Length: 353
Image (cartoon, rainbow, N blue to C red):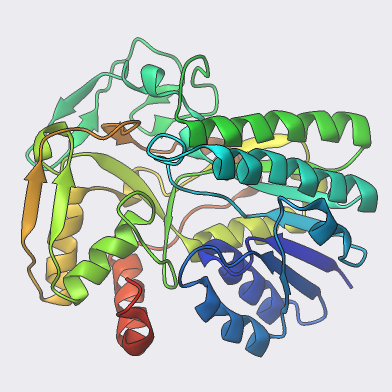
């Protein structure tokens, strides 16, 4: 029997991982810890309880909250202040204390228990000033990565793990990268097995999407309820491009890592949807219109927000070759899954999204 803690466990990713693990491995003891700060996370409490997952109301910023937990075999650190604007448009205290100090508290708990440690990092650890050097060209619907590049770690498949790390990346990205460095130190000096996953844009049902985090969920919800949207930045064209990963595909990745820790121990891996699931906002709008049957007004805001980037596509070649994992869900399936979730839970969600 395994005893597993998932931090941020009432959030979008954490709750999905907890419920999916409990369904697949009923004998495992699943604990989730969450401070319920993000609106909508309280809706997951009933789902977690029905799945047989034990909820602990606590905060990773508090070592005392973590130390009340029983012995653990594995910690999945899925908590975060996830907004790239955090600390830029607001005070940085909560961001730093959650994403960095909180991660260190979780590492101390892992060291105490000699527990395996799986960390959900972000593609935002890659520096903005280096990303801006990527050669791109403009098509009718998106900004596309050029075939020939003058910078290492980038090609037609996107950005790989050897992309340069020198530069600035947003305070959010900085806290996550700093936590990555601490994880490597704890692995070396405290003898715990660790793996770092630099996740691309994640989406799926139960994501309470906002304009600064969870944009795919937001886009589908606004089309569902026929509410206005905005193309913000880069001339207001909606051509900024990202790859998207269905949370179900992330679960398959984490599931493999849990049960093959010797193979992935010490690794730092890109985990994203890749070129196949990449989309611009303009293309996402067309998909949402087609699948929902609704069209919404979209405002064009030319000014680019701080820390925004023109294009990012995750090159996950390394983890694919190492483990055989690959994303399975299409963009169309992702949007359809979110739409079905909205239809089923409309009364609960219309006051939140």
